[in-house]
Image 1 (cartoon, rainbow, N blue to C red):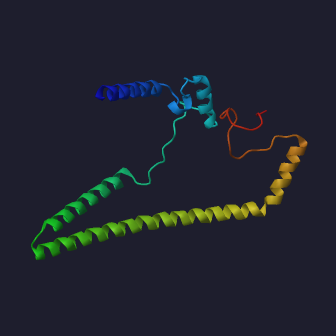
Image 2: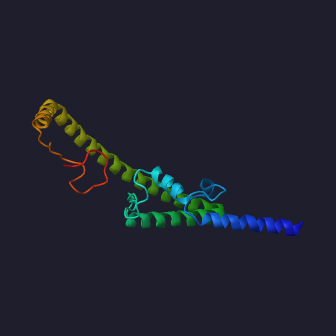
Length: 179
């Protein structure tokens, strides 16, 4: 009985390893081995661009600098040490003193967090003011911009682009071909 179970487990492991060597998951390959080319094409069609090894995903930059991160870690370690010392202390007077030190550390940390958050809010508010000014300006000359664009389109001229992809930069973009 044990030999049968061991042999069945070995067969399952070997089959799993053989299926795992391919690029596609085993459930997409099917039991008959499936056509790998078809499976790879289906996998590439999932994303509009397919697999692009030349374009690495950019990681989002952290809002915390390395200096701030070091300070935060030191603060965390100090709080942790004070907490452990307060938990281990049996003398009520020393425990109360350690608790007050811990309260002071936590209060300082919370105040620093509030200051940083206030700075972020002020920065966001200044950005909102800039965006509102831009919106108002855009609403004021909207009709003029539409008329200019319409004239250029009817004259067969290529309208100006103030943003977006530059010529020759993004050849794989969707839309009509660049002239």
